[in-house]
Length: 120
Length: 110
Image (tube, rainbow over all chains, first blue to last red; front, side, top):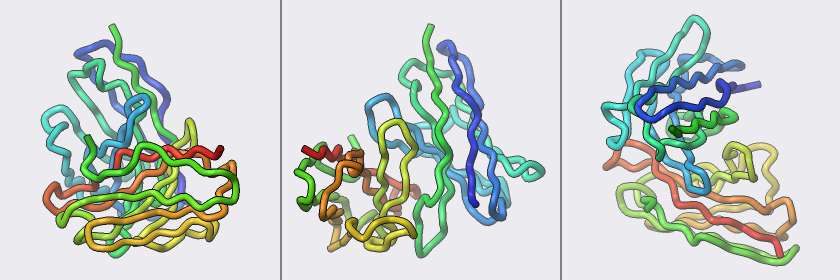
């Protein structure tokens, strides 16, 4: 079955960087774009961007441009999200989510989430 | 503030019908399909409705979705205690070239 398994919780100081991994299994890795969505405590879902695992092309939400980098490693079917210059308001659960292409245009599978805490 | 607008809360007694609205614009809901996600406490979101009104395998037929113009809605009929969760609408936004979400609606079973 399709699975997305993310790396464990992280605690970082302001100004540091964090890199979250998302290991996939159960489907052809290069066939689906992977998106990253975050959720601050008690808040809603916020889209961050996507990576095309086939070409490595990325597209980021304007809010995160310059601070986020999304990459992939086709040898181990994994994608990564690195966020730099962390601030306390970056404290959130970060999810990877597989996107089905048109006509569905939905996130049919999600990782379990990775809690990132930014605190001095 | 989210691009799509949902009421923050909704409630009902067991067996009742609850409806959640989702309002967008011509660049998102007006042009593209709407999806709904259910998020149980402490878990990742789960796809509940796709392509406006389709249920993935395993989703009870108590859940239904509809779309008209720049608005969509999710209905839960025969409300059950296990339906207590946050519900999010979502859709692709052509102006932003990315997905947008509603702010979420917390459903409480009284």
